[in-house]
Image 1 (cartoon, rainbow, N blue to C red):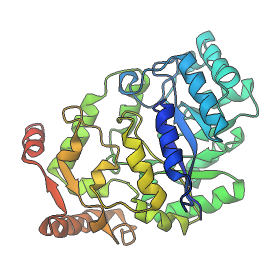
Image 2: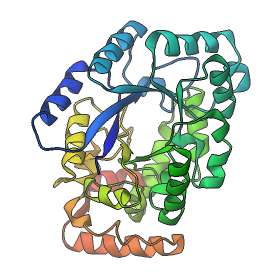
Image 3: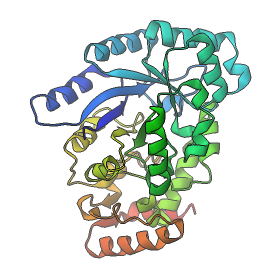
Length: 347
């Protein structure tokens, strides 16, 4: 099965050329067919704080879009911040949507708000709509209310990556409805995070979200089983999802250095990685931008981890603790003294 990847827009043509050139001439089945992103601070939010992503002008965005279109890569435009009705039905919002659909010519729109989907369909009945992971779809019941908008793809809730029973049922339903499922591969958020919606709502209102990241990472450092419970999909584990019928995966990382994406996508192209798993993940640490030096998890040492992950939330904690104990004994899991000292102060 050919795996298709959606990667974050760093708006850099050289990076895209490097990725495509690296893949060219090699016997690789996997491919990039979509890039996602948005302007940094538009009228409608996009799931990241404005200052954490590349600062891009409309003219530069148009130039980049033309470049990738010539190379057969589509662009999924993000309108996925939780949006208020008065903003959605404003003149500025309509002008922004008009620019996205008629000048930028996005191939699809990734949206969370049902109200915004309604407005988009009033303006354009043919553009593809994707349901964002922020909408929190975990099962068929969650999905049904979006069907009236003729959606093309869903990016389910983070936790669905590990909820295999629900995911299999969801995949069968989506196959029948001709809807694609795209899973977050480099996911690192806390599993069953209680602050998820508050975090996204803060971002949608263009508020600083450093406190959410600090809270999240404090729980990971003080209770490292949370690092393993996070919903990441290793390059070697793509086949587990292929067996369910899923072959679309999203690489998160719009706020990462642009050079980072080349290392990550190459690992997923070959479905193998011998380094530190944390280098592949989307962990954001305000005080530790070079987090790769602070946390080490040997990717290779996790062979069999996901395949045997319990489909029972009550067993997850013990399962991850057992793995963590073995990894630590073998030197395959390490935390630096610096990061331990910093985060034990804040719990």
